[in-house]
Length: 70
Image 1: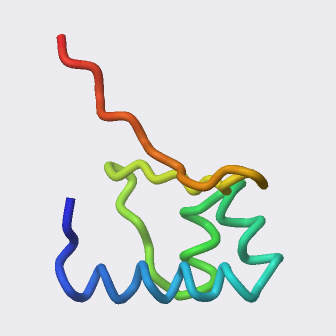
Image 2: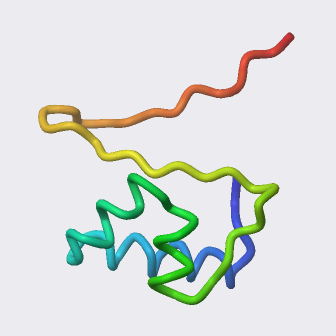
Image 3: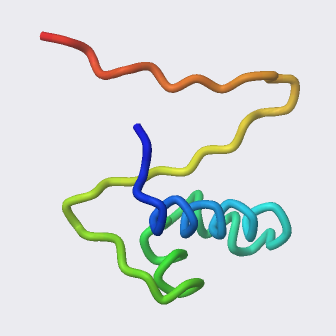
């Protein structure tokens, strides 16, 4: 899924900050909606669910499986 340019830039800013700000990174893992609102002043619509995860040590790639088709 590709994002519109404005949202892509916002995501890149969030990810960049998460590489240097340990407290912000932890907040993203616990409550991403609040972390982004407090850190960037941007609200995520309640209809959009988002979750951040960390790649464990020793894992070279992290792949999210697609939804199950029914």
